Structures are given as structure tokens and as C-alpha cells.
Image (cartoon, rainbow, N blue to C red; front, side, top):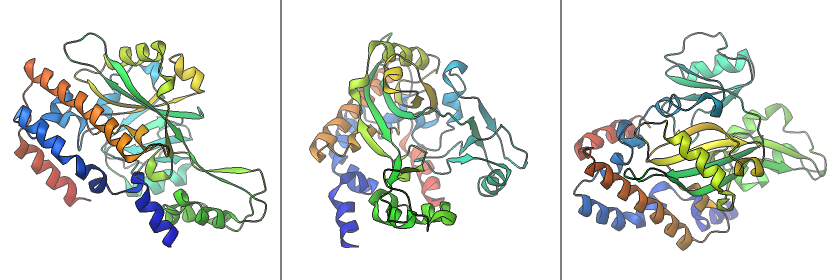
Length: 330
């Protein structure tokens, strides 16, 4: 228990949102004073509801992306049918979901029936992409410039456990801190295998969803940025009208393939996008804050240019009302 408490508070990647971002409040106030608009950041992506900050339909980002860069993707409104919408396996996620909430791989009809009992509203359905590598690519473009650029790349290391020939899967889950933090979900998911002893030199992929809340480790992979990758991301981004700031979550056959511009887009995030490479275990808190501020500075400059081009800042009262609704439902 003491070890888990120490790990939670010694590594900022496990801190609550308010604890990590709270110290950056003075910088937010500085940007507000410059823009005279508390919700200035929503104007970074004027083509989307609140700029993609809160309660925005994620399908709005995906629907304009060329199909060559997407797995087969469907939008389902108020799901009520138990009929499988795609051939299994496929991925289901809420259109308004955040931080991996509700993202599940559907393997059969039973999975789908259970899922739709929990999530019966608007869903995004995608063919499961079997590429082994997943990345987060952060993109920005100044509205008055023709081309944008990649400012960070994150490689996602999925949650796995390694067998020692003696420990059960249950013991390995409980002794792995990243797995332990989500133990209720994982112990339920692997209920029929918990007493199984995992052979030595054998690994088990516990969670194939590349989200921090699912135990994924984020690694700084900015060295993978190339002209070919940047050109491909820039071209895709220009198909998304009113999009200048955000993160693409993609899969690729390999790191080398990604560098060559070979990837499949799973999701696009707007102004609420985190620079996820900051959670690399090798980063210090000071270095992480430096990266966050670098990204937020881009966000501010983009919003200001969009305002100069005729896009109004959203009224703070309107965003505040949306935030109240959002937190009441949590």
C-alpha cells in the first residue's frame, strides 16, 4: 500500500488533472489578459464546437479525413439494435468520449450486446486495426501560413505482463503498478485465467487500447518526425476545415513505416489535446512543464490569428454553462 501511494505521488503522470495543471494557472491568466477572452483557446479550432475542448463530436474530425488514412469507420446514432454493425473484431467508442472512456474491442455478438446496454447513444465504430505500433502526433498550423508542422510525437507502449513460470496472472497484475491501478477492470476481464501461471519468457498483452488510463506507457518519440511524415499529416489536416491545433492518434506497422508517412488514423483530438510525450518516465517535472507551455503558446498564437481573420472568441459564460453540464454528468 505504501509503495503504491509513493508511486502515485512521486510521478506526476499519476497526479490528478488539477494537481499537475494547477501550477500553470498564472500562464493561463497571462494569456487571458493578452486576449481579454477567458475562452480564447476555443478559437484555435474555429471549425469545431468549443474548438474541440469539451463535449465535441469526435466524428466531426474524422468524417473529412481521406478514407485511405482511416480504418472503415461508421457513425451510429442512438444504437438500439443488437445486430453487429461490422465484422468482428471492431472498436466501439462514444462520439463524445474522453480519455479512453468507453473504448472497447468488440469480439462477438455478446460483447456488442453488453456494450450497447451501457452505451446506447451516439457511437463511432471502426474496424480493428492490427498494426502493432501506436503513436500520438501533435500538429499545429498558423492560420496565416500555408503549411503546418509536427511539434511532438509520442510512442505508446501497451500494458503487458511478463511471466516468470511461478506467478499467476492475478499475482502479476497485482504486482505491476500500472496494472494495479486498473485492477478491478483487469481482474474482471481475465477472471477465467487469473489462476493460470504464465510461463517464463512469455508476455501477455493485458490492454490493447493505447490510453494512459488503461496502463499504456507514453514515450517521447520526437526523433521519428521526418519530412515525409510531416508532409502526410499536413495534407490530411488541410482536409479538416477549421482545424489548426490538435493530436492525431495513429497506428502504423512499425516506427520506420511511420517515418515514411504510412499510418492509419484512429482519432483526432482538438484544443483539449495533451502533449502526451511529457509522460515519458525519463522526463522531469520541469521539462514536462516546459513542453506543456511550448504547446500552449502555439495554441494562444493560433487563436489570436484566427481572431484576426474574423473568428470571434467564444463567450466565457457559454463555455462555463457547458462545463457545469459536463461535470454534473460525471
